[in-house]
Image 1 (cartoon, rainbow, N blue to C red):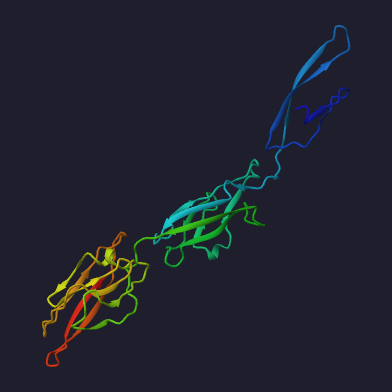
Image 2: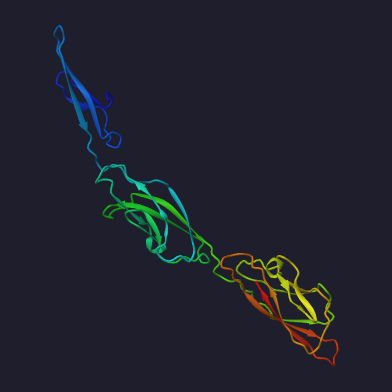
Length: 281
């Protein structure tokens, strides 16, 4: 108190020693004593209150300089992402401000001007953009002038299982000899969408044909090879499937590729045998 105010002992004029801050103390109270010089001395005391008027000297400040949120993809427009918060220490009406998004036209999000609630303006697709970065700003209550404060926002887009795996372009026809040895690699099939094609995915069980079996050799690639000796029965055409145990995702999705295998007979008097398989990922 003594550091903030001083009083003239002769005139009783009270003056400030240092600038007063409404945000630190909205008012000051103290006692002033008047004392005469008689013997015995006589005195009187009065209670003095000094109110500190507020001025608009405090800008709003965000509670956090950086906000991070996560939202699954494919949610409808208007889905809440999270909230940002800024505080202005001034007293009303000087503490009023609005929230806004910097370069809002380029961002698929909206912010409520009064509450700081962030929502989506459109459905998000993680396969297109995995995360969004932008700035939320605090502006004057009338929206005029430069931003008063800003905070960085990152919104990560969570993946959902909304795309089935696809086989990359490849030759659909495999041509092998009837003398092809066991474990001889005859082809490799690759799947897209970052699906690990291999025994874990393709190896649920293997269809066995009467003239042999087509199987997956490795767990990290889709190498195809014979896993039993080929015993040709000419003139037959069979349809087989390599079924899958999908790696995960909800709902589960799978892709298929039909493979035609032509078995070349070594006997010139016999016909070649063609079989078909459906590879599943």
